[in-house]
Image (spheres, rainbow, N blue to C red):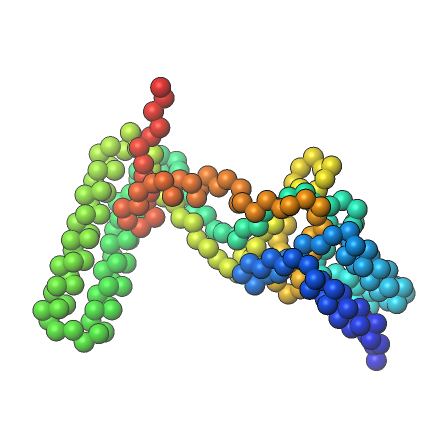
Length: 239
């Protein structure tokens, strides 16, 4: 039978010690921002586990420090001076003009049919009177008519517009991504946080918490979305 008492004690003491530090939570992940003193505690815990289980490669892998925390800049020597956190997202982005132009009619029909099906299904399941159902149908047809006008406008003025078929879909299962700069490094490090154990980052300067510029998100936020995943805006004019 495996003796894991040292591992259990080490894990308990280490997790207790982390509670004294700043904790950043996003989705189902936890990130602790620690100082040099805590790095020394982690290093001692690492050495203790290596001494206890180092003669058995299988046990060391199972009961190492990496089973307790994800130590991002784990050498404990190079602190990060800034970091950013963001939820990992899925982007659908079609930008090639000829392809977008060919897909416009299909996108409009898919949106219209999906909207009709969803709304009429809800209306008929609520036990409304025929008059109420007809009123909802009229509202729906009016919404579709407005979108169709925009659709025709886009097609007629396509060359003067920036048109994309795009989406920015949040999928929590993709997790949280951290980007951080280590002092003295020539480029940033990017990795995904774990959601099964705490994540730990050693830093010396105040973190930067603003997300990096996202061109897709910027386009979506500053464009009109007449229907489905079609977005458009006037092309920037050179002066």
